[in-house]
Image 1 (cartoon, rainbow, N blue to C red):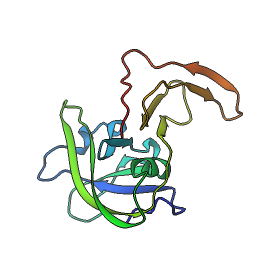
Image 2: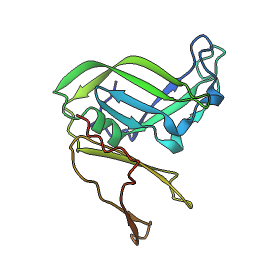
Image 3: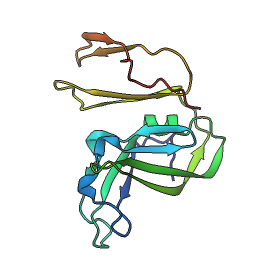
Image 4: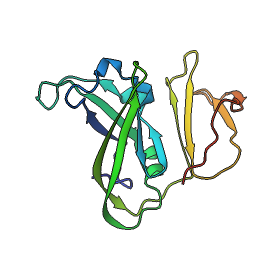
Length: 168
């Protein structure tokens, strides 16, 4: 059960191919996302990895984790109580294909969240990084980067190839 108001810092899931539909070594780990409705959140890069056979069925799993902040964004606006929702975890394969798995999960509401979720990888930044973000409100985005000592590292504007898509 997902409880966004709990103190849990992340939620992790085990993902594995069904009937040899793909190979875990072909999965581009940084492309993995969770989707609910029209929203999607990126997996936490530092906590997502190809794992051993944790459930003992002879098939290696990928551990995929999502931060509490991103989970809160994904389910923001849900009413009080425990409700069942269908979500999907999907990602890109080095072969050019994608994998996708749907499952039902229970979420304890109410869920209050912000209009934006973001993640940066790798963290710490060295020497380049990828910033992924999602927003539920249309409009411009301004990004300021700071180092650990709160020293401003620069202002960045989205490249013309970036998609500015508001989700709701």
